Every structure is written in C-alpha cells, then in structure tokens.
Length: 240
Image (cartoon, rainbow, N blue to C red; front, side, top):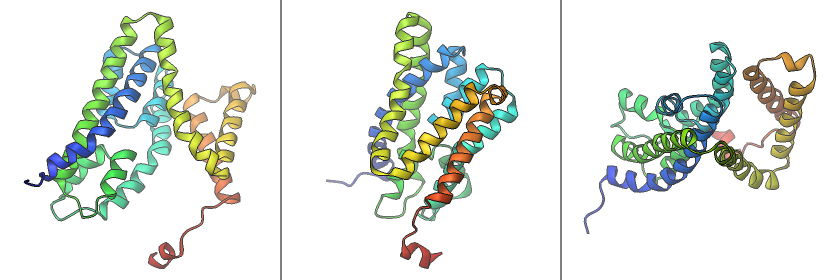
C-alpha cells in the first residue's frame, strides 16, 4: 500500500480536532449572537481569529462598547501563549517552511494543532501542516456560522440553554487539571475571587470589563508564580 502524502496525513490527523472545534464554535456562535452581535459579525470574528478563549473574552467587550485598547490588551494577555508555542514549534519545522509558510501556519497554531504537530516523530513541512490546519479551520468557521444562524432562528430560551455549553467546555478543561494540580486550583480560585470583587465592590466595579480580565489574569498568575513556581526538569535547565 502506498504511503499517504504529508498533506493527506495532515488532513487525517486534523479531523478529530475539527469535530471538537465544530461543537465549541457552535456554542460560540450562539453566545455571540446572544450578546448582541449579528450572525455575520460572529462569523467574521471566527474567520479572522482562531482562538476560543480570546474570542469569548472579546465578545463581552465588543457588546459593551469597549475601546480598542481594551480589546488589544485583553487579547495580548490571553493569547500570549501562542507566541511561546510558535517558538517551540519552529524547532520542529523542516527546510521547506519559508517565512510565508510560517506566517500562514502561525495564524492557525492553536493548542490542539500545536500538540499534534510537535508529537510527530520527524520534522514537519508545509504540506503536512496545511493539511493539519485546513479541516479544523473549516470546522471552526462552519460551527460558528451554524451556531450564529441558530441563535437568530431558535427561540430565546433554547439559545440561552445552548449558550451554557461554552461554560461546560471550560469546566471540562479545568476540572481534570485542578483535581491533579493544587496550584492550578488556587490560581483559578484567586482569579474568580478577584473577578467577583471587580464585579460587586463599588470602586472596582467601575473598571471596564476588558481590563478586569487582564488584571485578574496577571495578578493571579504572578501570585501563584511566586508562591508555587513550576519546577524545571534538570535536562531542560542544562539545555538553557
């Protein structure tokens, strides 16, 4: 049997990611429309971005009429991890990855795509990576469009119920982690406590929502980095 081409192998590896993205993007589409955005605005957000956490953080700021500075600052904090993942992935690329190819792949370098790409036993090239990102990108955009369209057509009580799915996604991500890692649980609890203070304490409640996200994330991360730093394996230290 002839071996699959790198592009086809990428398509196959990206299919499970696309299935997951379809459901999450569907919930995002409903959430965006429920927040006051139109179907086309919600879809355009997904076409020009591919970051679930960033998009979910940006929608409330947009709906509340927040400033461009709030949007830019919140996205910088939330999506900074992609820069680190891109640096790591760059060590796994072969010689075919020219600068234009790197820029194209960087647009879709999500957590799941990064994890699959770096797990390959050999260096990866643009053919494999284009196949890997193509189906998930289609799933993300299609899921958003369908969810946004459903948000326009379905009764309000149905879309409200479906919108809860996006919070279920986050719970599914964090619950297994906090059960195994106490510092992560403390970081989440501290972030939630700070968010509640900014919501209900009169002086702090005047802070725009976009900056609340930034403040809570930075403070909680800094505190836990100080009191519970992550141990670096000796072999990593030796290569540094």
